Length: 288
Image (cartoon, rainbow, N blue to C red; front, side, top):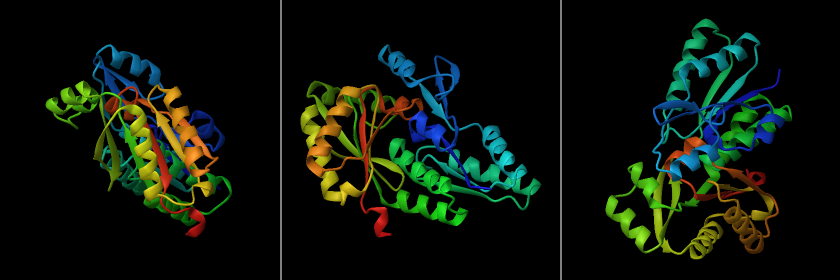
């Protein structure tokens, strides 16, 4: 039996890749107007962003434990080795829950081969880790090789992103009210990154065009061999900006493999409409 890759909707991978690589994607939960919804199952990103623009303040929670346990049990029953790659434990409790469910299933199926990996990544940065692990599984790599692939990518993936409106980060407690108001008045766009699985600001830039230029500067400072890797771009309902960033990246780096995806409800609930993020490797996998 091949290795089954399990993940959650915080990975923001396009649905055609989920289907093609037979990834089992479990939904994170979004609560909006007091209703619980399953990310990309009972609520789609565009629905969420439209409601947020009208003032809705969604909250998110981890994948329901029962769904995780059922996914592990199915693999145990069919003697299929599986790897669950989760959204960063710095942003979600899903990794801890998955570990607990793993232990419960192993009590019933002691010989089951179940692994859980904390991606320490988010959005399509997380998605590219899952994508490469799933590709390895599809190619017939064994469990150890699949895990090694995932660990390499999560260790060398950089996230650089900006948000369109600081109000959404304010709601999530990421910035102060004063910073949000001043940022809006001065058209300041924060540039942020992921470090040790959590979000941290890098600097503040005035104007969207300047932000993209600075993001690419940071990418060129931190990354290498762009022509030998896939660069990811995710956006929260701003395809035009994502396309513009793609063309800038191609012109500056020569990279032709650029994956664009919509940010899902789990990440978008906190970042807000108009968020743009890009993801790249600091060292290409061929150098491993």
